[in-house]
Length: 378
Image 1 (cartoon, helix red, strand yellow):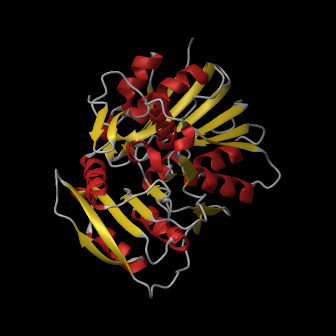
Image 2: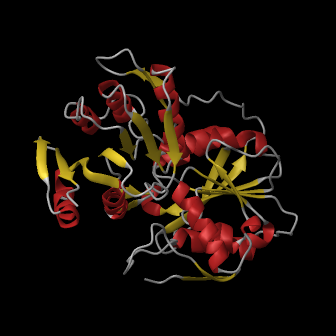
């Protein structure tokens, strides 16, 4: 797959994460190219221009605009790591881009805001609200995305929180949205995070804007909770791809002597999981890791891993993240350790699991989901 991005700002090597052989997907899309072309032809930038980039997938925008030392906001650890790696691959200093998480916004005013429209509308709403204090009457705001991601809800949110919108013509199925800031707009109260009580428990659940199924327990997690390992001898347990941490929360309840690790590549997910755990177990310790899965864990250090893998990476449907999690789990599990995975039926995780572990058993199934279990035998 093509890894060289050529735009008016220059030619750059840009790769996705996680890395895999025979990658079939580019690390940028036509909306990135369209936006960079438009900036080159229409926006007069100086080296002192303050640029904010929001939701840059793998650093294509930040790397191309590195001479301006932009601030890049992302909820994705993988996106931030890709940006660092792509800066280095192009012999650029990491200091060329200031990387901030979705919960750590800058306070200085900015001249130009570039927003790649995220998959989650709630995340976009949260970002538009957090953006308000950074704007001046002269700030230019441009959103970009593929046409299929530009639903009417995207336009309505931008008009509600920023001002009138004007679309560009579509180009290679990509579109730009230009926002004319409304000087009379009122700074709204942020509705995120949201809270609900976990059914059949006393646990209050916090969900930041980019957490899946924010308002209630989703049907997949509900099914998984009915089939968690209970009262095993596991000393170290991982909720891998933890989301809001509900699975790890219940594992902690069932394994009172175990140490829990909550891992996700989403900053908002880990923040939610941390709040939920300490609200339930104020006197108990756990680890919360914003990371590329189990990359930083020692080999053969974990007894039990429970995983509900994502099958989307931003707007792309892929089993890449799930397969990476399965391989990492094989390295990290102790001999005799267990991995339990839930997935939609059509994803057929059992094929990859059996190839990796040499065994795979079905624990439970319904019309939509299957729960698989593997044991590390060597």
